[in-house]
Length: 251
Image (tube, rainbow, N blue to C red):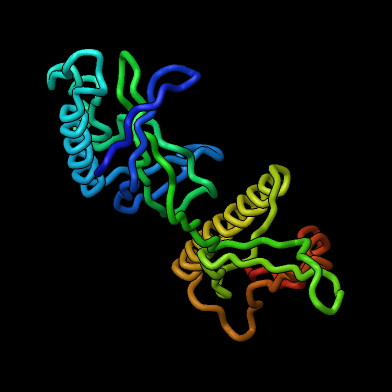
């Protein structure tokens, strides 16, 4: 990898151009928060970067005429620090600044175009190559562009990842506290009525057994048990009205 002779920069430092540039393995740019994207480092990229760094370091050491005094490995190696590696937590990460992706999340490669050398550091210069944005899975276009026939823009909505709602699912009901309170009170009245009916049936059976044990079976000539009208129209009148029944004869 031939490095061109250093050129002094107006902003300070020296620029060493690589001809031709070295292209890295592909990288994936992902969203890191809001509109910010960052490349995800890989083991393959770290291996490639270490090889490039070692070669560049060797070439710098071989050009002693570029420096005011002969360069030494122990001086240049700390200045040309690794570009990527493992953090203190053992996670892969970049140690150098990278250019932002030109179009949000996507895939591309880094082209190493040269080095920038100052009195305190030797940093790589990068350019993104062959960047391909990620396809948009979900598309919402409420104001589509003009078509060839001049008709109104199309309106497309694609939500492929949303699960279809099962037709067997009950419709959603909007309730409030008043409705829930009324339902609870009505349910309590139903329970109370059922309990009273069970108690009344139990008492009626006991009274019938007691009557039969004391007076025996009813003869055909004797009156039968009164039949009460339990309808809403006759309930009030039957509770207080008289019922045709014969008084039992004295024994």
